[in-house]
Structures are given as C-alpha cells and as structure tokens.
Length: 319
Image (cartoon, rainbow, N blue to C red; front, side):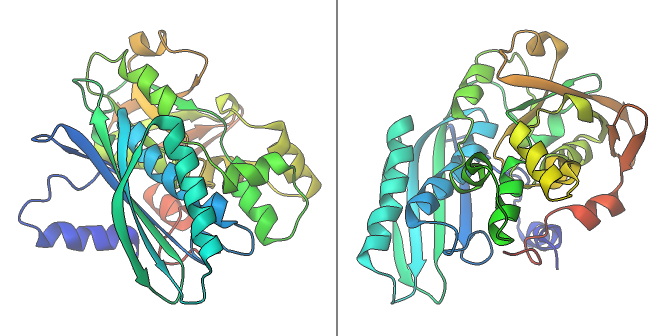
C-alpha cells in the first residue's frame, strides 16, 4: 500500500475533498493556511543519531516548510507528543528547547497540543500561517514556458542520513543538513511580494524529482530539468566520491532537504534574488506528463513507472 493509494481511498469517502491534494490547505473563510506533519521514531528519525533538541528543530521546520511553500507567514503551531513511559524529563526539556528556538526565530506561538503514551516516540505538529499574497500556490498551477526555480542545494540531507545510518565519515555540514534543517520562510516572503498570479510549487521534503513529478501530473504538463543547473554542495560531491556513490541519486531522489521549488513566469524569475536558482522549464501539455532530466549529452525521462520505483514510499521506507 502506497501513500497515493490511501489518498485515493480517503478522497473517495469524503463528501467534500476540495482541500485535499496540496501539502498545505488554504481555509478561505478564515484566510489562513494549515498543515500537519508527523515524525515517527525509527521511520523518520532514530534516537541513536538524533538528539531530542535536534528532533524539536526538525519537527517544527518540517511543518514550516509546507507553510513556506504556500507563500504564507507561520503564526502558530500545536504540538502532540506520544512517548514511552521510559522517556525522561530531560527528553521533553531538550525537545522543547529545539521547538522554542525555531519558534522564537520566526515569532511563532505554541498554541497547545496533546501528550499520550506509546511504544515509540511520535511528534505530530500542526502549523497555521497567514496568507501573504492575494494569489495562491498549488501543484496544479504550472503553465507552459514557466521557469522552474528552487532554493538552496539538493541532496545534502539524504547524504547526511546515509552517512549516519551506515556509520560513514562525512562533513558535519551534511549531517547537520539532515538533523537540523531550516525551512525557507524568508525566501517565501520574498516571492510572495513579487507574484502577480497563481503559481505552482511545493517543498522538496520527499525529493526534487518527487516534487517536480507531482507538479507535472497535477498541472498536466511535462517538466524539463537541467541537471547541471541544480545547486550541489562540494561536501556532497566529496562524500560521494570517497564512498564510490553516485551523487546524482542524492540530488534527484534524496528527501528532507526542505527546499522550495516553484514554477513561475519569466517576468517573476527575473525579479528574484540569488536565493533562487533556475533549474528547468515547464514544457508541453500532454496526457502523460513526465519529468525530463537533461545531463548535457543525454536525457532521461522520469515516467510513472520510474517514479514509483525510486520515489519515497512512506509505507516501505524506514531508517
């Protein structure tokens, strides 16, 4: 069973499923965005590699990334925590030190939550953000000839995770990219002030190709990606070389970078700061949207079967 299968069942059972589809829902009557993300021990994190403080940082930023992808300003979060009876007070103290650090950075208030007992540690956060622009962001708003832009570098987090789980030496930069990610809140605020129409976008929490393929499918357009234009860190290149790994797999398929990817008009792209990088274009509209990755001397098509083989499966992949 894959996540998309569950979503199809859920959509079929709801009388009104109009708010389901994007990672962040816009509640029009309240003029706010809302999202909810859950981190489960031994699925999304391991206490052998993640400190409670880092878990707090990551749990909040995972939600803020979805708020940022909607071009909204985060205002409130609720925090639900399920933990075994063996968990010590110090765990909660350090967890909330990390949560408070991120909330203080963006002026976010913690507005309650819940605490229950469980066999594993589960941190579930709901985030609420204020709409910054009269226009909306959705996977389905990409148009032909729109520019594909992204923030930051791709692949650092997944390389850091690979190093941690396989006990390999890696630059602290890679490990910190995985353990202490940062949501692109400021970049979202920048873009929200520039757009003059609805745009397509989401974050790259499940991988860059994952995001682009979902945008392509929702918009019924294909996407052409120029691999050589994707920002890649020297630390990732060196780590891959030392361990005889193909860095392209981290860049294209690695998750939890929490960068943002948008499809915007040429006019908007030209106004963006250096925080955004042009990595591709939206191309033809067709009945079977794909992502085409150009490597210079050859091109690879990411079809549905390729996507399903390599993309993150929440019901199979774990640490």
